[in-house]
Length: 211
Image (cartoon, rainbow, N blue to C red; front, side):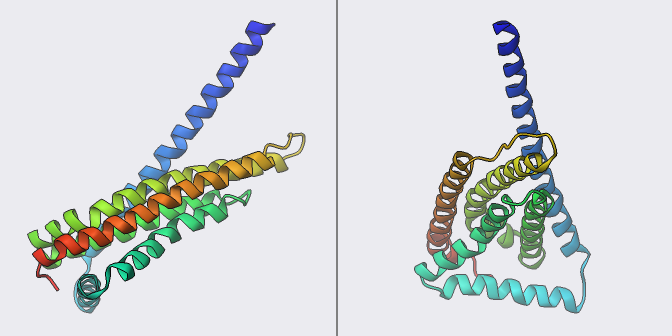
């Protein structure tokens, strides 16, 4: 009996790990799809819309040069924290999974459009600017956002299962406490990404005269 019980527990643990991996891969895939679509969307645009996007890009790059370090950190933190707060809140909903899956998609769409427009507008300078200033802080923030989306979907699934008939309650006070702790840790990565953003702008933005 003990062997059977242990075996069943191991299978349940393996299934849980497998489901988490599928969720993680789905989030990454949605981000990649969004990024590709954002890049292609910029490439297909022409005329007045493209000019407006160029103006927005120039204002974005120019503001990086004129803002103080503190302002850069605050703006960078707020823009990235939004993509973490949304899945955090959706995690408390039994049907929040669909909304959470849109977060990496929109993040990829925005990043793809930004990088694509920088390349189309400034060529190699745009690539250099992206590599030294946008990508480093984005990579850190993206790590936190992807993990946050995964944890959000996991909690949503627990809430959903708990409301089904003849199912035991899966969400406990300790579950919610651990969820909050995880997001506080992920929020520290957003703070780090904002610090990296401000530092890299101060160090490298003067190299690229593209505003």
